[in-house]
Image 1 (cartoon, helix red, strand yellow):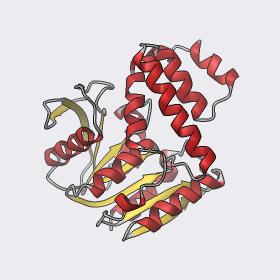
Image 2 (cartoon, rainbow, N blue to C red; image 1 turned 90 degrees about the vertical axis):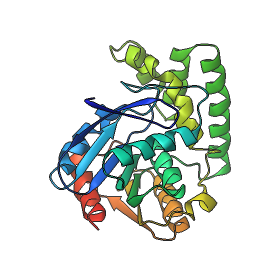
Image 3 (cartoon, one colour; image 1 turned 45 degrees about the horizontal axis):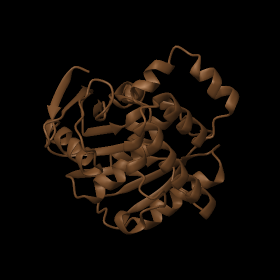
Image 4 (tube, rainbow, N blue to C red; image 1 turned 135 degrees about the horizontal axis):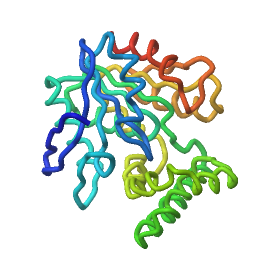
Length: 259
């Protein structure tokens, strides 16, 4: 990260900018940093001034206790001020939940877009989310970062063989280093259900996307979010899953963000 801004509570937030045009800030999901969004930023930089950043508690950004979702919204406010005072937001997965909450808070936005926010769409999924929250809190409270990462991977649907393989991979140490931020992503998802009343307060155009090859519940969640927003629209990205390809996603986002 080449630049920094300071959030309201004094936390240093690291970011990078590229391209020219209307300002867009990209918000990553769990277990990721701004570098995760760099390929998408490269695709969009031909027509937009794109910012990627390390969310607090990961990468080159700082952190401060106690955590609250409001602090992450203030981080976005500081970034938007740094890039000109107004921007559009795009959020991936749980980063999309942060974008929705930031948009509802009244930040100076042009537009907002999210991709596959993992909301619970039935009682069983909501119970699983509540159990995950409890067990994650226990693991992190006891300093068991590796167990916290395992919980997240299992909650995300990864098989046991893949989890064991991940533990043996060179990436595991990096995953453990950002494990405390898993609680932050869990917090922005609230109780796991679509926050319809909060989304109803979003006054800017909102695009809610799901992958054309993703399971049906991703589409159900996306439709629910779009329907809750005053100016929401639902769309699909052809032949994509949760691991959406930047080169396929970028044209869909660019058309919407250009207005």
